[in-house]
Length: 292
View 1 (cartoon, rainbow, N blue to C red):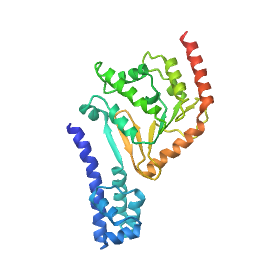
View 2: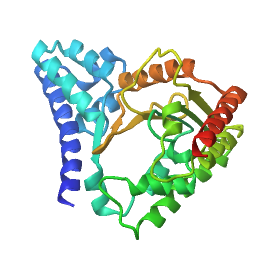
View 3: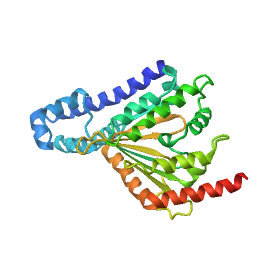
């Protein structure tokens, strides 16, 4: 619990440092909150919320604030660093799993807030598309490890998340590499998993793109990512990135835009619809021949 509290304190501290520095620069400039709001095109109430730390300003807003108060170069660099840090949350697996058995319920709540989910996976089949057996094998390889007694619970929670795929009011898009489809976590039956992916791709609100190994690359992301897209105009979209020791959540609009561009380029490399299902069928035939 100490590590978890420290993570929360660090994130709060970064937000508060940003708020304090913005207020300090406005005071030094001798400018009222009303005047500043008028100059940078936001409401006076938002200026107050930013300076209290209850709202994180976007990087363009911080740059406009810096221009308005004629902040020196060193202060501008500090504001940029503080803003980027405030928009990035870091949650270590070890710390998160100290307070609960698994994180599937937290992830489901996160997913439920998005109208459109876009998942790119270069290494394994995405969790929302996994069979029960595949999920169990993946969780058995997790580090830090789950206990044998906890595995049924975490697998069941992952399968519970998959019910959202049948909600026609929401949309799910997946891009998966051939390498991820060929990945065999333990002694899992890949043919059943490939059939599961092909079946889910027929849902009206689910799109599955497959990138063959021989596709010409136009972008090479070093890791998978998930884009959580809210209703247009809400500004609440964010990206989640899972690495070996932690989850990163990125909310900065410019960084989110970077992942949208990568998603678009990945889409140019992928097969969709009947072409994707035909590819999955050929892949199944190839795997079946090797298992004989």
